[in-house]
Image 1 (cartoon, one colour):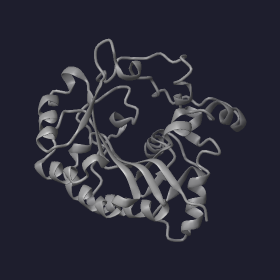
Image 2 (tube, rainbow, N blue to C red; image 1 turned 180 degrees about the vertical axis):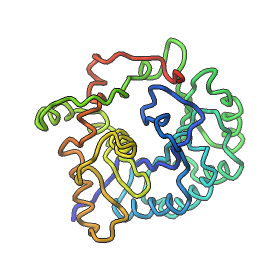
Image 3 (cartoon, rainbow, N blue to C red; image 1 turned 120 degrees about the vertical axis):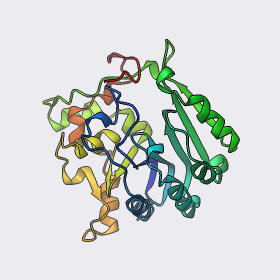
Image 4 (cartoon, rainbow, N blue to C red; image 1 turned 135 degrees about the horizontal axis):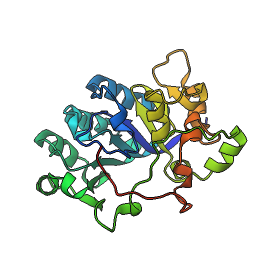
Length: 268
């Protein structure tokens, strides 16, 4: 069978966050009982991922705020066993929590394979100085992305929280979403507690019961009754058709200039 490569594979490790951003692209404030994913489930998701994919370009851990889950030092160490199967380990933080010494030690083992990104939300990122110093002291390079003031990254955020059904036929939705940046550029697949989705929107809308995904919209990584070959076929078809979330998502319009941009990280 042809090889299966994930361009970006994000594993959700927590639905807890230190901020309550009203336009959060992952809809974190909507989780009424946010929680950390246990270590055993995270490493099971990692094992399943590398059973399914031959190679991953970007392996990413996301939340919520990833540093809220304090089991992650062990997770980073565990991922080293697959170090030859992914190109980069990508982390993003909002600079409200300082990584622990154990986390910094584990991350420093990745060297240039690690891409650490810090979202700077101005006054909200109140630990940004300490976070940068912690990375520097551990010999970890990082990038700062500005999300406050007049020169915000990507011009600010969009409002993708309305969830209104487009009322389109599948053919109309397919035409509209064919050039969605999540599909055409990032192919940003997400795993949360044993389910692989084609993007963050499909993942979190499904988990919040905003939509009921079709069977073809996700892969149940824990389902032992379905062969790896069948799971790979489903994953390979993710970007050949729209999923249920596409009917309620505006990401396909982000490159058209039609969507209003809002200041990032406005709090509820």
